[in-house]
Every structure is written in C-alpha cells, then in structure tokens.
Length: 178
Image 1 (cartoon, one colour):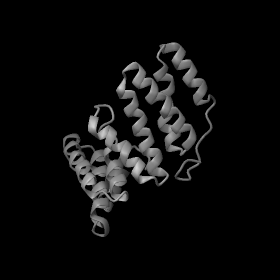
Image 2 (cartoon, one colour):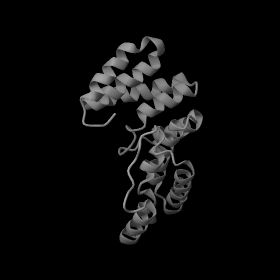
Image 3 (cartoon, rainbow, N blue to C red):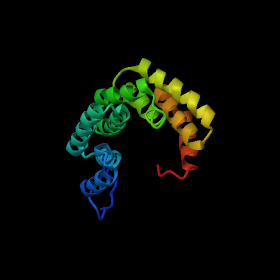
Image 4 (cartoon, one colour):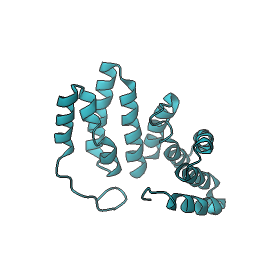
C-alpha cells in the first residue's frame, strides 16, 4: 500500500534490478538511481526514497548534474508531504522552485502551495500560487486549471468550497486518476 492506503501492484522486476540494467546500458549512474524514485516516494517508502535521493544528490554534485538533484528534491517533496513533514516538504519544494527547471518546475507548484500552507508560510504559498496561475492560464488544460483551483481552495481555507468544486470538476474531466 502507498501513503494514501491504495493497494499497489507488485512489479515483476525490482527497482534495484531496473536501476542496474539502466546504469549498465547508459553508463550513467544517475539514470539508474532515478528509476522509480518518484514511485517509491509516492508509495511512502521513506528509508528507501531517502537513501536513493542521497545517492542521486551526491552523484549529481560529483558529476555537475544539478538537475538530477532537483528530481530527487521533487520526489522528496512528495514523500514528505505525504508523511506530514510539511517543513521538510517545503524545503524540497523551494529548492526546485528557485531553479525552476523546465522539466519539473511546474510539477512542484501545487504541492508547494500545500506544503507552505501546512508549514505556516502563507507568503511562500502565494508565490507558488502566482507562478501556478501564470502557467495554468498559458497551458489552458483541465489538469492545470484543476490544480490551480485546488491550490486556490487551499489558500482560501473555509471560503474555498467553490474552488474545491471547480477543481473536482476539472480534474475529473482529465485522464489522470485522482
């Protein structure tokens, strides 16, 4: 089961085996370490996710590949948010937010809003919401607009019911499982 209590399927190959195969094939040790890190974090496998993230960050520093470290921060954001460690989650979100990499800068914004609010930092939540609003309006997809509505609902607190309903409607219209 993952951190949300959802039953997850068993894979016929372990992440460790997949990492070994990818590392050998690509001759890049970072590629192998990044395999499955997001999924391990989503599943709430704390010790395993942190261990892999430490290796990734160390290799990224050694190889001068900071983008890999940001991928690890994004995974740890999801892990810590799911486990209720909001201050830690926010730290990881800010690391990605500050660099704003094209491949995942947008992905952390909704989680950054939530982490910041839960950590008692509404100013940082507002910064993330502003960037999310810019990108959602440009994207125009139901997914982006739904995440924006959800984030606005979080910021609005008790007055956010209309935004929550909008988020539910928009996100339900996508192919993503919510």
